[in-house]
Image (cartoon, rainbow, N blue to C red):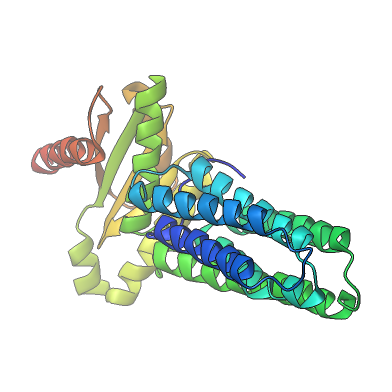
Length: 309
C-alpha cells in the first residue's frame, strides 16, 4: 500500500459514511447488549471515536491524501476486530458480516487491486482473531461462510472495477492512454517534478497530411497508421515515459526526468521507427507551471514548426 490517490472520485465521502455506520453499529450494540458481559462503556467510547472520524473524513474529504485514506481503512478494520473480540455471542459476531462486506467492496472499488487485497487480508485477519478470542460457541461454520463471502465479493469487485478503469482510461483504437488518463497521470508526474526539482518535458506529436491519407487511402489506412505508430513508438520509449492519444492524429508524451536536450534525442529515435511524417512541439517544465501551461507552450511550438514546413 502506498500514498497513491484514490482511483474513484468521492471515495473519501463513502469512507466517511462507513465510519458513520460503524458508529451506529457500536451504539446499537451498546443500547441493546446481548449479554451482561458486553463491554458497554467500550462500545460507547468506540461510538464517539467512529463518529469523530466520520466527521473529520467528511470535512476534509477533498483534501485527504492516499496515505490518510489507507490509514482510515486499516483503523476501521481494527475497530471491527475489536468489536468481534468484545462480542458476547455468535449472533453479534456474525452480525459484523455486512460491515466487513461493505469495507471490503469499498476498498476494491476505490483502491488498486493489490492495495484492496492487502486491506481485506488485514481485515479478515484481525476480525477472525477477535472472533476466536471472544470464544463464543457454535459460530465457526457461519464465520467461515462470512469470511469466504467477504473475500469473494472483494475479488469480484476488484476485477470489475479494474476492467472499468482500464476501459475508461484507454484509447480503443491504439491501446494507449486516452486524453483523460494521460492528463491525470501527467499531472501527478509534474507535481512530483515540481517538488523534487527534477526536469520534466511534454511533447505534442501531430501527423503531417493525415487527412490526405484518409481521403486517398480510406479511413482504414489511417487507423492502421495510428496503430502502427503507437506500437513502434511505445517500443522505443522508456518505462517511465507516458504516451497517449490526445485526439484525432495527435499524440502526447510525458517524459519524467527529461530536459529539453534529452527530449529532442528521444524524438529523433521515434522518427527512425516509422517513415510517416509528423511534427512535434515540446515544453520543459518551469517552476510553478501547471500541466495546462506546459501543453500550451508545446502546442505553440508545434504550430510554429507546422507553419515553417
